[in-house]
Length: 316
Ligand code: GLN
Image 1 (cartoon, rainbow, N blue to C red):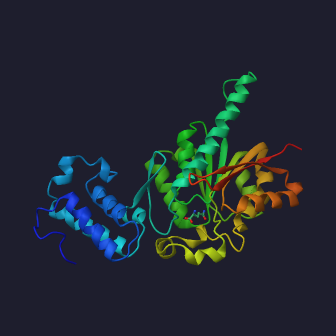
Image 2 (spheres, rainbow, N blue to C red):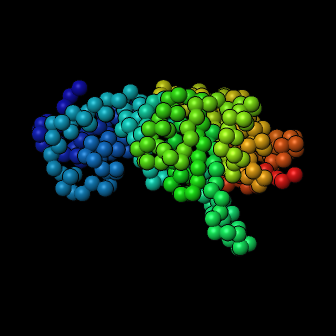
Image 3 (cartoon, helix red, strand yellow):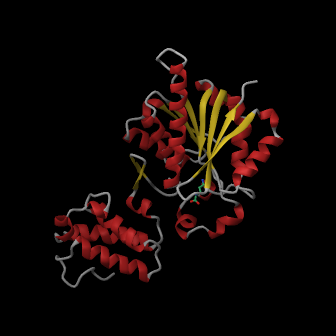
């Protein structure tokens, strides 16, 4: 590939961003500017291009930096998602290792974490109003389909009393969650299981006692919509983490059928779903009254689409 400037040695970060942005555009790579900015700032040790000061922007890059930028950009030219190209990505306040084919956490899922945290804070407040002892029971949380560990590890940070059980059916995901947990020194409060959740999972998942919360960003894409996903997803991510079957509800139904035997009374399930799912899930719950689950709330994502469900177990 040609060098990124006619003046080798005098290529600045700004030159490199402009050069690779053009190359990406010419090759039909989506988010050309963002991609080149992320790659160049990563090589310069910064999170964002905007955070580089003017000195770093206009100091000539070293030959090694130019070489690194070129290598990473070549991966992006093969439609590798920038998160895998960099090998790390931020979720809430955490920087997590990323590698294919483990599902890349999406920004909207940060709100799923916040919903669990809000519910737990609200429960604690309610208990203290009722003059409960100060030591509220530590919440025990199960995450189904933990991927890189983004949701579980954020919850551990936001809820310092919590314990999390994180399960995934993919060994690659379990390994990455474990690695991220160690890097963040959260390994003592997380139990990571290589496990494919089914209706017979209760015994194994109840080892830590009845749960306060089940949280999941399950595969929920309708099977017929899978083919129209971006090449970045189709070529690099584990599609089982996205494909929810014909109605997108395959895994969601398993989680809901299992939930009553895992949750404490009044325990909650928080799910990320497709915008068409809230009505479908509500109808399904009404058709299965024996599960004693009630749809408590539907929350929208930052684009205004219904995206998160809060479902609660009733006491008998
Ligand atoms: N919103 C995701 C996407 O299409 C789908 C996530 C999922 O199935 N859990 O990128």
